[in-house]
Length: 153
Image (tube, rainbow, N blue to C red; front, side, top):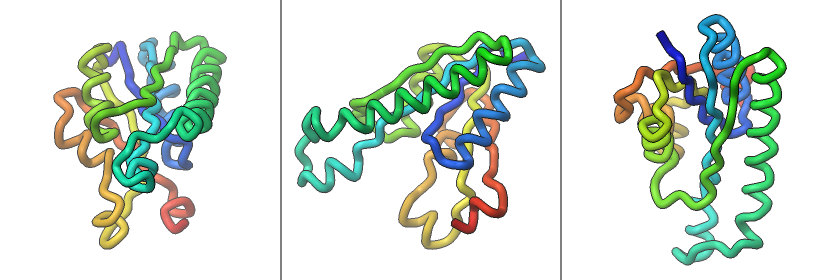
């Protein structure tokens, strides 16, 4: 059924829940997982007035992303699951577009991603990468919601 699961992660509580769901699903289906982290530099580019941020600005974000990915991979391999990861640190597109492209490039049978469940003004201001992925991916997408506690934060 689902032999290749792509799980984009960002370190948020809902992302952590999605990692656990991807691992559980992968263990049950005996499938492999690819974790994906996109260093989202949108805010840094706007701070630098449209100029690309320097390596000194990008490096800490890259390092933090690699740590997230290695922890997720370690959790999967501890369960006997074949897992790898990809870090995209210079995206030229929105995070959601990078996820959909990686899904096609690998190619994944399923995307498992956390969603914050924002509504109203918060949704309008921040948008939703998960929603955009659902709208544009041709691969099935499993959305993992935050718990009530994390949705209120």
